[in-house]
Amino acid sequence: MTDEITDDGAGRDDWQARAEAAERALGQMRHESGEKLKRAELKIEAVRAGMIDLDGLKLIDLDQVELGEDGGVTDAASIMTRLKREKPWLFGAASSSSTAGVPRAEPSRTRHARELSEAEWRAARAELLRRSGG
Image (cartoon, rainbow, N blue to C red; front, side, top):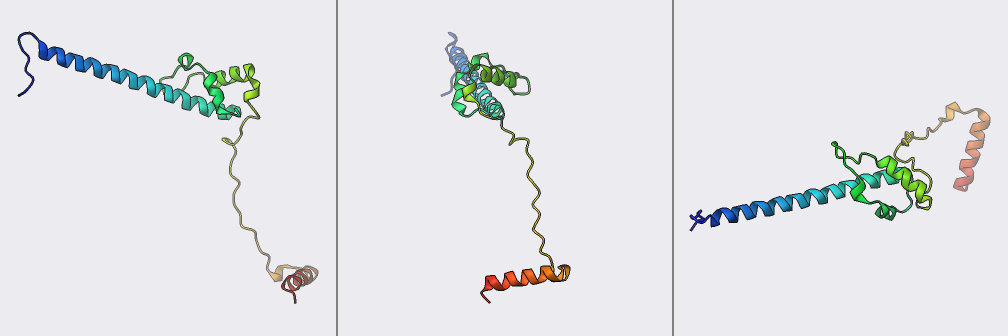
């Protein structure tokens, strides 16, 4: 048998209660995802600022942190600057790893015997014979 709306409105109340419960659950999920996003954004900024132990992020009141329309924390750098000024022992040297480039890998070039002078050739030959035990 299906849920039918009776004259007393009992079916309508059931759907309304379900809708309200769904709204509450959605609101809770939005709040939790916002908190996770705030923590992630602050963690990135803390690493850039040189925070030694990321447990120091627990000192930040997340209710005071605001998310921008782009989903990022609007004032993450100023929050880290303030925390660094108030609790400098949480920070070491600022990390430059995010801006450093990887050096190009170039294989070492072996010189051909024809490119060596006679003195260089004799020295290389003597070293080769010494290593091979001959």
